[in-house]
Amino acid sequence: MSEDWTNIQIMECEDLSGAIVTVFAQSDGEHRRYVFGNGHPLEVNRDGTFTIPESQAVLSVMSI
Image (cartoon, rainbow, N blue to C red; front, side, top):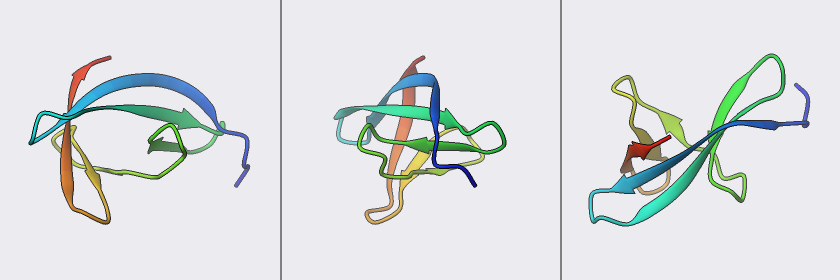
């Protein structure tokens, strides 16, 4: 897998406490991943939300 990731979408998300964070959808041409600006990966949930793996915090998309 290539390490050359390109931002293809930027989303503003909110956690359950109301904190707002930015999530980037990135692609290397074959794969897609979702990360914070520092490259920290997120898990995608079936309902369109994201989970921060270490804390199990759920992020909901506010705007794209």
